[in-house]
Length: 300
Image 1 (cartoon, rainbow, N blue to C red):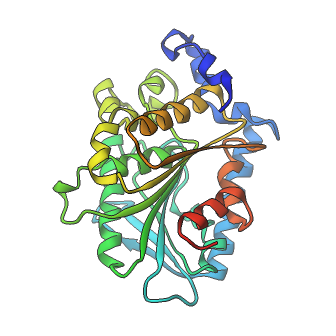
Image 2 (image 1 turned 60 degrees about the horizontal axis):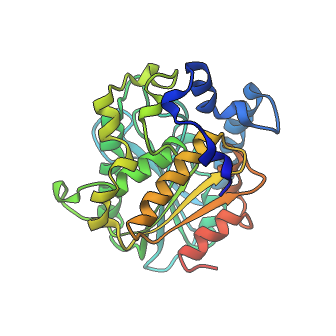
């Protein structure tokens, strides 16, 4: 872990323009201009998803609830054993952008290894609010394990806002639901785990979160209740070398909080990556994080 994150002043002491810069991932990309990297990111995810739909069997727009946007896409390997691992992918986009339509790219390397990939849709802002999105992804997990009872292992992967939602899934009190998912592993990639710093930034304009909403939906503040249901889950907290210092600090702080509670957690500081290509490269079987995910599933 790089020392600059620890040296960052507390976000409460930052001027609003600096705080917004810290939470603008495109401003930190060294490969191309801010506007260009977002366009390139969407294009890369779409291309990867098109490839996945060409190599995997797909079942698209499967409802997991009755609300608008409550559906998911399933990418099935062409041949599989009765018991297969299943990866649920939760997309990023600051809870207001992207969709499941660009989120099947992980199936390119995973389907050929016999892994089922499920890309989950949820109601992004302004139609959806934070409480609704968290409730939706939790219900999607319940629906998936009810439909695929034969899976050998359930794994979560989320990027950016999706990593936040995946961490909220890990924080769920499953006594409110009909089942308790046995989640074996979680890949949290360049996520946000404390929502308070973004309350005063442009990110919150469509979300309209209050402090109360932010507090109850901040995984970093829910680690104690994680203990009972997720202690057996192997968690990887990954961050890009060229994520902003504040993004890096979010990942480091969440990792340290999990580690202090004796979770099975590792930290991956991925060199030569930024906020965008750290997830785009999951389309490649030989990418470091793809290999780690396959190793977590006992498949390499």
